[in-house]
Image (cartoon, rainbow, N blue to C red):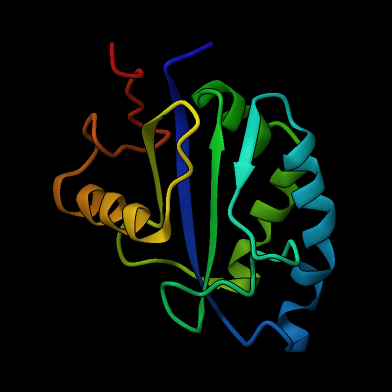
Length: 148
């Protein structure tokens, strides 16, 4: 068993309320895309409420959706993000989300079995925005290996 797992946070500012027609295609795809992630090789955990809903959790503000998960490694997450049906959703993201000022995605290593809380993830995102990619907080363009 590995000593570390990869945590990720992705935040996105919605162009309209989740219930609006603007967001309808995104909302319609959520269950399918979440099930795809849950079944993906290397997937370990994702943040969701007791009803299994991640969109109900708004720790970064009412207009911000949060996706937070833990994966076995960077390669597993990259495969899901860029080489699965998830990529079709990413291609349409500007229909539903406003581009972020600064990073909206952060990756970091956590001890195996640790499931991060939103405040921990917020600190990692702030670190990436302040310092750029480091071993403490990084992105797909500049990944770091797990601690030795």
